Image (cartoon, rainbow, N blue to C red; front, top):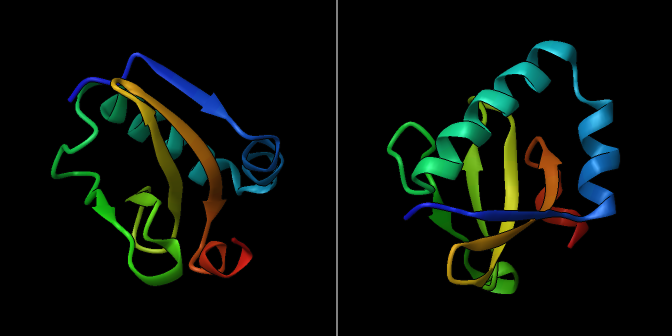
Length: 90
């Protein structure tokens, strides 16, 4: 599914600025892939469970993830970015 609009939460923007430079570059590349097909196998997109059941994430690399939520058809909100600690903040 192609994504036409991404809304960036202020927390996401703040967390993104704190990422290491190489991870930022990789995240930008992964976002391009995400916009074309949010379920591209390179992203390992999956729905979360339990308290986070309304959220999804995709992988930047082995350690870093983007936490997001579908809002409308072809529109998502990026909530947070970082390592596995992002799951404890919600």
